[in-house]
Length: 348
Image 1 (spheres, helix red, strand yellow):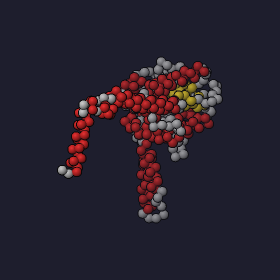
Image 2: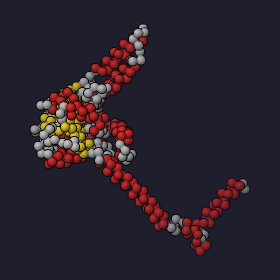
Image 3: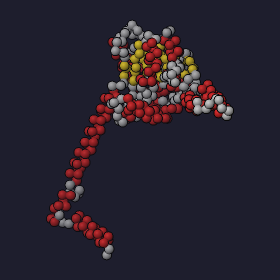
Image 4: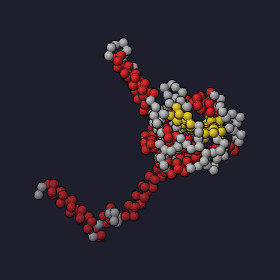
């Protein structure tokens, strides 16, 4: 018999001797046998699971508390009731940082600026309820304050879910909606890309950031609400527009990929000199391609189709040659494309 086989046989004999020995001769076996100590095993497992649950619960509660600091209506410290207030509302998986350039222009134009931040990955209706509560508190504190809304993308739906609900309290003079997905957006299916992008920048800029934030701000309900023909959109669009509020929709007809492509071609173009034959022709060809990409009109801004931006009962529709981001944000040093329209509407 080989050494390997002998070892195997000894192990098998010991195993059966251990679990078949009479109880009078196996007192030590009772100590280690799960069948004799099942309650002890269950107690140990329960203690371990309870400890993990308690640890995770504390982490989740801390993550929620840290996120809660960012959400809600953020008004200026020295809010003047005699000056108009513009409430800026961001879109899906975004934050108030997208309004940096717009806020500077508004303040230079004599407007007070406030921000409404919300957990943009959860149900849109819940975000609207949060806005309603904050606006009710603002109205109670400053009943004579004039308020205007400027919202980007999904933020427009959050604003409408307050404006067109029975919780409307604080009067709003003008509601300016930038690239609103009133009838849904195909980008709802790629929501996870925006989620990753949002959490990357929060990790870079917020010391309280935790990976748990990817789950405590919602589980993708906003993406479901943004799908064309979702129950949320059907319910919202069935409501009438709010009397007394002036609606303006600003939409874009330049696809975001065209702008990015034009930028890439421009970078290649700078690599070719115009002083050498052959390279000069390459430079000219790239210049022509860049121009076509930059000037091409589309039926979408890259995120929201033009038809989705339209809304029954709103006649003030402005279509600009800009993409989804360029409408509301500074791009390549240029001010937000929607700025001049916003400035004109707020002066009415």
